[in-house]
Length: 326
Image 1 (cartoon, helix red, strand yellow):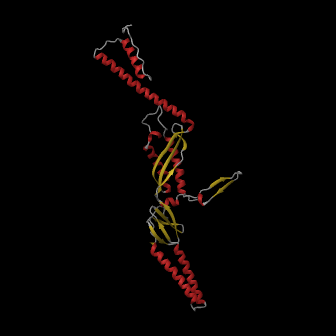
Image 2 (cartoon, helix red, strand yellow):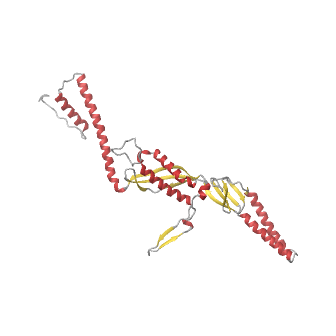
Image 3 (cartoon, helix red, strand yellow):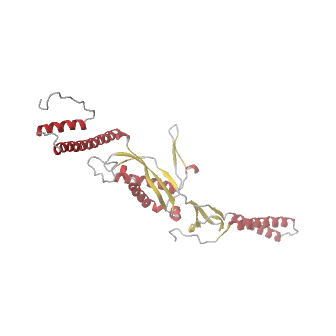
């Protein structure tokens, strides 16, 4: 029994010649029937010829079911009485045995734009995260036979409270499309739980996070999706996170925390710069012998400079009309 995609090796004829042959065959059957009606043949011979003509007509009708058209990036999975006989990917118009079941599959790339879902990150914080997946069918055998192709069920509730279950053509879709959606949600939840949303005060900034991971996180997500979807013969061309935010219930708190972290980081940079400037000023005064300062004067000068350099508002100058010792 075949278990992998194979090229169809059965009889596959050009469609246009077979179309002309079928038309000529049908015209011949009709002409033969008209001739029989107008002929002088009677009795069992006439009955036998009419039955023969009817049988030929039935054969002709069966032949019409053997035509198939394959457009670019499409394939037909050929099944003969429940047995997989191969896949046809060659573009064109063909005729095959009409008893083949010619299941149509598209090989075109498709998008899945998943709605953001709420998950917990590595630190347990609830976040909203969404993804976009570009995928296509790579193995027609797995796509056709490894995933259930049943219809989707729609459950509706009437105004009077009664519940009805409806299966209609409008609710049917390829089962592997639903399979992609379910597995994408599962992979996204798994990846989101492995990493923190963002760096915290105790985290190393070299640690990978959902917010700073970028392409690396997308590559991990794509790898997990390919592993999950391989059973259905589906290849993930691209997967990326397209929405990332804290859940509404903690968004305000986390925003204040981020603002506090930013203020602290800015203050640290300002203090480092101010200390460097004070050190440079004292060194310059000492090397160029501009003024001799004792420890008390240096302490006062350092204090004043730090206030001027680190203050949020402009310093107000105070003029001393006496001496330095007053």
